[in-house]
Length: 283
Image 1: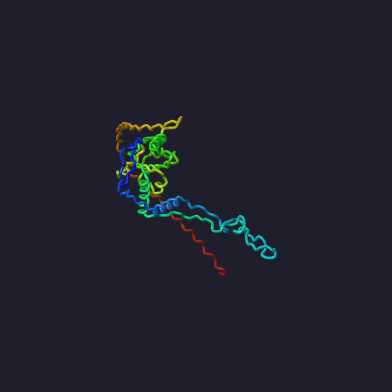
Image 2 (image 1 turned 90 degrees about the vertical axis):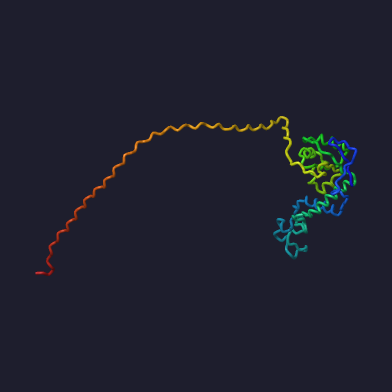
């Protein structure tokens, strides 16, 4: 069974050592897997946006610098050739993806190996709990000085998310705070000392993250005024409707008399017949 130094929340060392759970700390350190995990982590941090211009992307060089023969010089087709200053680059870097994926169980083996390596060399400490209630770097530095690790690279593994501890540690370049479940093999190997909160090793379910404090306003700045609660709108009494006097029933209008038919104009008399004239040539 592997044991680790045990400390109180104030930084005082306890008489007995803390026995690490055998299911996880079995002393196995797989170096090839650790190397693969570190290589994959560093490769995944690369952006892969480096790019050089080949001769097809360099501007200029559209005409032949001099004629092919008769000058005594070597033949050239463009001043943007890779042989010329300011020309294109041959086999330069191009945008690519450097990401390396690892199986989930291999990642877990690498993480377990990293923690076992730190525990075997006595660089893994166990603290009952972190009592940091507000983000104050001074309190965290005082705790690290009591533990004797103020000048070393320290990784703080908390039980769940501790906002106050994360904000206190971000001002220290050699200190990093992470939840125990989120620490990768690279994070453990980066640190010289790993300090773990006891409930995280005991397997207790973490407390859900709740913002426990509100940042204090800066000097001279006004605190945000609280919004007044909305008062319930008083219901206005509905105005009583005045009784509307019923209108007298309208008398039915008399039916309109049909318009009288206009007399048709008398037909015009046909014109009087003209007397028949004498026939031409008649006697």
